[in-house]
Image 1 (cartoon, rainbow, N blue to C red):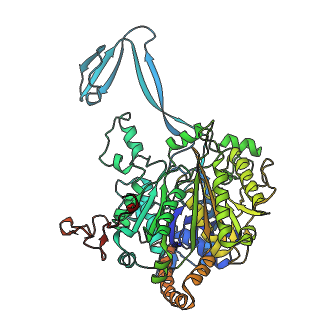
Image 2 (cartoon, rainbow, N blue to C red):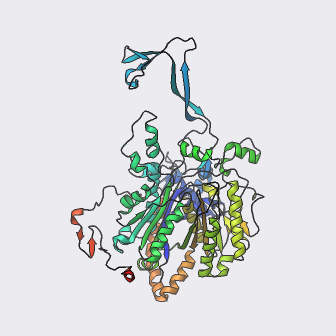
Image 3 (cartoon, helix red, strand yellow):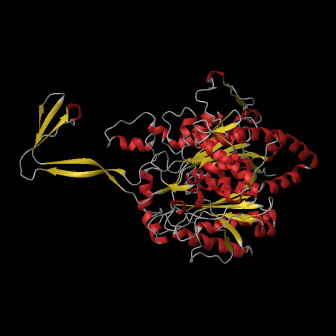
Length: 634
């Protein structure tokens, strides 16, 4: 009997804000929220962005002025909304109008006479070029005289064409929420994202840890682009050319597996299974598949899955921009026939577009098998039953889309139909499209959806794409889709693609309904979400995600009325503890988990025999393999 992987916690941060308790999702659909939810969403963001603090039962600004929720909406809403989601790249990242550049110059004296200059003695190259004559001067300087040419690099500044990105809310600095010394931004975000997910469960992690064997926990997490800022591989690769030194931390902390390593070591304290799978922009679903397969097979009982990516650096933007993959200011001006671009509308999945918009994000989900969730009274936010992965086959361009996505989408829909029947798929499902906002993607992905819809007799299939709000975060992109889908299940509102006036003429809309405005249904009217992801190189993945209402019905069928009654009673306590965390986090207390050097394992106290291993600090033993799975071959 297959175990059902259920989502019992989720969290993270992207340009919409905090993901747990659907806060970031609510920012996306804020126009459709009831007034009280709108105001609470704004207050949550105001505290996250440092615009307000909460003390003595009141929201206050830096000057001590008090704000009610209505006043937050009245006085701060415009600022909050303008400084979230996709927008013009802010100067805290780099100045898009004056980006530092190194201009090569070849200097020579036109008269044919020797050149000379003064320089600090400690700046002399070693060895000194043979054609240089060096003379000591005052103040520890030397005079250099030489004949010939001198190649130098001079600081200059250039305007960049790519000027928009999905940045974390303005004023929110992940590194300020824990002791993040020397941590690249992507790892800072991983610590915060995983902490948010763990805290959202509403069950102490120690309780979960004590309920399973140490090797029944797994973490799967990665970053597609590694850590390429100055504190990671970016700084390591630049140091020699910039005349600096490589630090002891840049190389190890720059690895793309570090998000998993940090979560295991500093957030969970886990000795369980670990992995860092990358599949370009489909990386989250690749990691999620490993976790789902672990749980359905019974190898693991708790899995933490997620990704963290901080790619808003000039070098990464240059790389994708040179491929003509990113939306540029000139391209957007040409599309819209305007002189001034609205960068909020840079990302336009299925619209008239000219490239995708880079984004940063950290997202994590906590999965349990259904039996453990029932035992602990965990709150279930959905279930992931299948993730299908297929490659494209022969290609002319490694970055172009291909045939593999037909396979993944068809399998995902067929799997859902096999479980839930035709009506659930045809009338109560929606697609979270990859929706990268490139001309090639809008055509090819819409053709895939139409083909699959025709095969399964689906008409007017609702399609949305959250990259229109938050941009393309690479490895966590499909995790962003999952977080938004859990919000749809909770609130009934499917976010529309509001960054475009119309669907592009070359998009196939015969059987799909690309929502340009929020599509609101009654809570419980959505049964299944299909998360579709396409990555460079032919990395296609599609996930089948069931709503919590469907998951709960499945549990009722498996366990019976009495067991469900007992479970629901336990769940009340879980929800109360989870809501307590949400209340504190909404007021700025993120309760980041960072256990550096805490509860370290004394290896001298490990007890080992030929049957089991006992680890200090863990309640249960690890059982060693005793059976031969290939005994029929001996």
